[in-house]
Image (cartoon, rainbow, N blue to C red; front, side, top):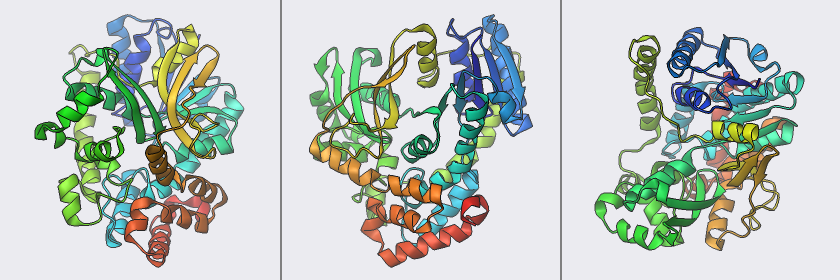
Length: 432
């Protein structure tokens, strides 16, 4: 019987969909699902929700729950993690306030620059701890994790552990659904081929009924109602030729063009500021928790549908040998030939019962490769600095961020990084 361990199963965003995806697949519906979280109340809610759904779907799944990560991992065939970094939202707010002090008004701050680099450091103890436990308790298992930055965290884990792991994101499929809506096409009739680096991967092909849909997308961009929904990504498409994954809010902070001052921020990403993004998430969380609790303990049947996430589809393909294609974040071993080999790239992957097979992409268009190279230039340094507790490497990684470099001097970057080390000291145990 297949054993799936889910670390941080109390997640409001991921857990309900993952549980439903598992139960809706016949090859997995009789598995043992071990739910693990450090919060007893959150764990109890998702456990109740899972058991309710199992009764509703009449599936023979075995559901277990534990606060002990090692107990959850013992003998697992697959491990899913949606755990957050040390410090959680509190640490992210600290990072944003420091960046604002130095004139960096980022939108999300979870992927690049100071926020992305320090989030990598804060993720390391948790993710490497999971790997170390797996090396002992389930060394042949696959680890699927959702952890931004989904460039540096997978790189860190590939460098530091032999555990088979895959960093996953939903920006490719969500953007594909968005593009279909922009051109008024049923999503099922569209097709895409996407490659680059996570959150900045390029729709190298976007088709509708086998025909190139880019001319229609450029036409739709002229409609202000559509353009205003995605200003940054449409501007990037206009100047560089291809549409990008992730939102305009995220993409605005990966390049030096859109967030240099308040006027540009309001022009390209109106209302999206460093603290507002995080404040919105903090405000939403109690409502999400209450809604999940009501679903778990209420009498109403649960609404069931397949989620757009790749994770369970990958596991299903490994168990059934029914091939499945998804975009994954893997070491660049010649898959994208004009990007460095020491970074993680996001490329199409085929999975079957023999494992995950990244697809060859070749050269990206040169303008796309150049932007990806700039966006990921500091990634190896961020990982080196994290693994070796090397403050200078961390500073250099931050300095290579395109937006940071366009606004701050090297002295200012040094001061900002040092201030962040002090402010986040309780969540950076390796740097004490």
